[in-house]
Amino acid sequence: MCGIVGYLGKRNAYPVLIKGLKRLEYRGYDSAGVALLTKDGDLRVYKTKGKVADLENFSSDKDTTGTVGIAHTRWATHGEPNSTNAHPHISFTGNLAIIHNGIIENYAVLKKQLQEKGIEFKSNTDTEVLVQLIEYVRTKKNVDLLTAVRIALRSVIGAYAIAILDKNDPDQIIAARKSSPLVVGIGEEEFFLGSDASPIIEYTDKVIYLDDKDIAVIRRGKDVEVVDFNNEKMEHEVTKVDLNLAQIEKGGFPHFMLKEIFEQPDCLKDCMRGRVNVEANNVTLSAIIDYRKHLINPRRIIIVACGTSWHAGLIGKQLIEDFCQIPVEVEYASEFRYSKPVINEQDVVIAISQSGETADTLAAIELAKSKGAFIYGICNAIGSSIPRATNTGSYIHVGPEIGVASTKAFTGQVTVLTMLALALGKERGTIDNVRYSKVLTELNAIPEKMEELLKQGDAIKDISRIFTYAHNFLYLGRGYNYPVALEGALKLKEISYIHAEGYPAAEMKHGPIALIDDEMPVVVVATRNVLYEKVVSNIQEIKARKARVIAIVSEGDETIRKMADSVIELPHTEECLEPLLASIPLQMLAYYIAVAKGKDVDQPRNLAKSVTVE
Ligand code: G6P
Image (cartoon, rainbow, N blue to C red; front, side, top):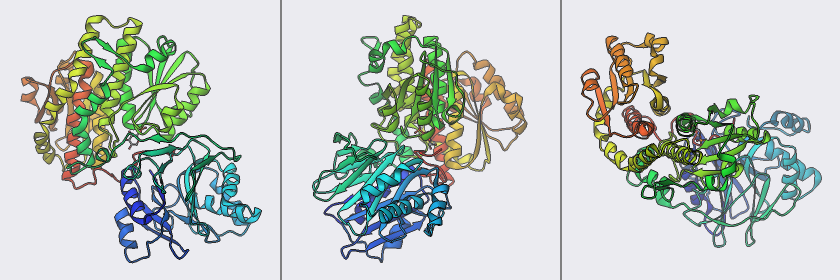
């Protein structure tokens, strides 16, 4: 979702801002803009619908000088994507420029009040309300910009990360946040702003992660000052970012998504490093040691998440119930936050989120906290809002995920959930030693087996070419592989725009079978486990209706090979670990189909990587 970049320093701001916007493209957006304070004291704003490259074209013959500026990629919420609604927005005096990420919930009331005072609005956005309100307060009360921002934000309800430039003060940027991430980078005589650290790391590894209701005053020649709405100084540590450029570049792959698919063996090694110790027959998660009394004997566990993370949660439920014998519910965070959950301090809530910024998941955490539940986070983005809002948790440590369609974060989340279930099961004495050792040894071997599986990339590419004609796909799986089917279908629809449904295989006969004909490919995850024979029957039923079957099977399965049109073999592993392997060919299938259809794999239409609005 919307991306924010800011620069104040000794360089020309424009190239830094454009590069920064490109680093944030992965978040998803539909228009872009930049505001610069030029040498001759002018405030120049250039904005356009489309990509950052369109903004560059648009600005190519314009004055882009100036050592201070702010820039933005907008993911439309209020008002269609066009150059008027694109950010930055300018105040009625022409002096202030603002960029904003988030949603102002009471914008309609504020807008009406401002219009009654004679202020004219140019756009349909909620953002413009902010800049007009701040300017109104500043002129009416004759106060400085910081004071006006503090006063104005007190009457704003909603989520925001903002950055503001004042035409008459080219040595300052003011930034503020509430429920939307914002990072300040500190270089040598220069400062940076970003929605995350990716636009900053090229220049400095020193950052300040702003907290909710922080206002940062960035001034040339001074230290960054952070205050709250009452002008109280907020102490902030300058932290070192643990991120390097190679991690956020494509490294020779045509798309981030493909790079991230192929990175998975290494990512899972990183995820397990220092945690899984096969020789010692042990899994160590520091959170379980530090918070044993909260985690060892909950009445039940509720997993809250969205999208792909929710699918990981479904696998987590099976793992935890299987190894720990604790009842687990899995809820969409967006539904949970508006439900009336019967939960209390005996419950543990596990919040799963790649970005650590998903607004619905954050709200679900706040609700669960207010009821006294203990909150455990499973996140990827270090220092993001969710890890800071939870009581404890485990990072998945798979590195930045740039492709909008989640791949390595999913397998990282499932790996952490497996380690969590193993560690808790052992502490509780609900998993026997033989099984514990077996699963642990197999988990440790997963990266190597993934390497083997990834070698089938070309074969999967060949299969994918056959299926670009399809308008609908069905994905089936059972048990541990049912969430894999859901995730496979989600991957395909996200990036190829082919309609795809995931179903538990046995449910096929209760509806979806009506759709099956020779134009409907069916992907079946049919590994050799307790439900194997039943899934084989499902494949027969599908073939009887002339659909093409793509089967994901265990190595050496000759039975299904004879029945299915295409077969992808998985190395053998424990049934509970099969999702870690079975999801790989489904990610590749979706990727190659989308590429064959010429789709924008890394930035699919309408989707955002980090969904910071409801
Ligand atoms: C967006 C992304 C999905 C992601 C979901 C949840 O919809 O496009 O890939 O699964 O948000 O995000 P989170 O960061 O909380 O895992």
